[in-house]
Image 1 (cartoon, helix red, strand yellow):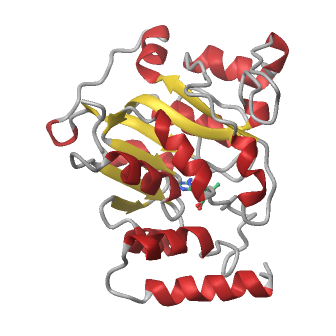
Image 2 (image 1 turned 180 degrees about the vertical axis):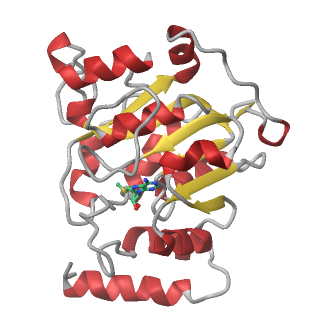
Length: 268
Ligand SMILES: C[S@@+](CC[C@H](N)C(=O)[O-])C[C@H]1O[C@@H](n2cnc3c(N)ncnc32)[C@H](O)[C@@H]1O
């Protein structure tokens, strides 16, 4: 895609910063705000719309326990926000998985504290990563290209596939999803509404087969950041899910935490 003059200038500055050996905090932030997914890639093809920093920062309030896994991590906007908010008093284990090697290369520069894996989330089981406290994700939305399917949900919405995959390997989920995929309305509305009419047929199917119930968590009006997305204007909600309960609802045995990946309360 063609960037505006201003976007191209800022993107080039970000590229110059990335050439440095080590980046300070302000430089990392600058890259998150200005490195443009659309400069070298057709970002609509992989839905590479990176989360605005403000929204990522607000989303991170909902993350309560580590280790943290970021699925479809892009260059790490969500993982960086979690790291920035929660890693002051004790180290936080962070793993980022992203398909595009160019994004992984940028991610390794701006968030070297995370373990970066260039891979497909539909191959996650083969990576044997252990168990996580929280999965965060702003995945591709809707009926985009997928190389596979989640274990239970077989429908068209990419975000539901990622949630279903996450429910096998973590205790909590904090996701950014299209507003239409949430069973409530809050962002951009005057009040919170869980009117049953907000539950689409696809959502009902997703909840029935996975046992995952999407909730509002600590209410954040994602609409405040509507104009901060690069090149798109999207209505989203931040949703949370108790994945331990989801597993119990579908009668699965909770996986044991591995020694390498013990869960721990970030507030402790
Ligand atoms: C909407 S972007 C969001 C990126 C990042 N989570 C953020 O919030 O800025 C979705 C990302 O998912 C990646 N992606 C798409 N399919 C994937 C897959 N099967 N496995 C891993 N990453 C994938 C894309 O390359 C893109 O970077």
